[in-house]
Length: 196
Ligand code: ATP
Image (cartoon, rainbow, N blue to C red; front, side, top):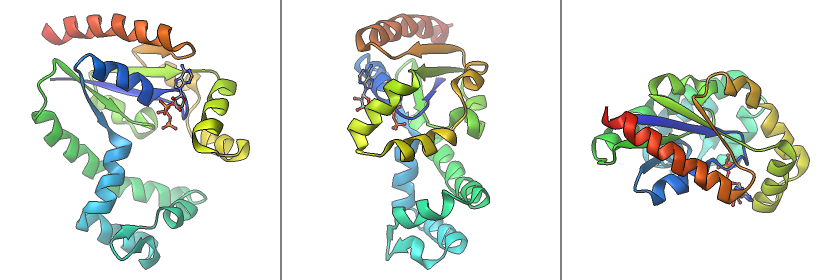
């Protein structure tokens, strides 16, 4: 089965675009949601995260997200170590999920698809883009975050210029109707490639 990676900077509209593929009957796996779920449910991950970040990382069996974020936000080594616990678990969860899907191709949505190297496992990769001002506006509305918080998160992701070099397709998401018609167009291309 063909796997299509879907990524984009925060607020670019990845999840919105993934929804357009879903409407076409394409199965969508959201890696970030799976990571959060596994952090909550996997005993093995809980043990590894506590070994890395300390007992405070969990309140009993509930991950203490604020605490975890506060540590890894300023400590790249710890962030990488945390990712090296979660990413392999997500990868095997995805492999199991994939075997149950019946669409011609599936979408693998991840925020750091290029940064993590995950794109190499995908047959094609799609980058969703929108300009910075628009993304800031959307995220301020959606998350009630401050501009400083959003810019700090943006600064940790690769620039679109760098990601574009690795992407096979780009979906510009300024106008929703235009983004949707780009999805229509790509869907036809991918169906053909998936059947060959
Ligand atoms: P994150 O990485 O932060 O999860 P994302 O890339 O998945 O973000 P979405 O959650 O899809 O982005 O979109 C961010 C917000 O912007 C949402 O509230 C969404 O409804 C809105 N949005 C997405 N696309 C557009 C658009 N073309 N025009 C206006 N608003 C949009």
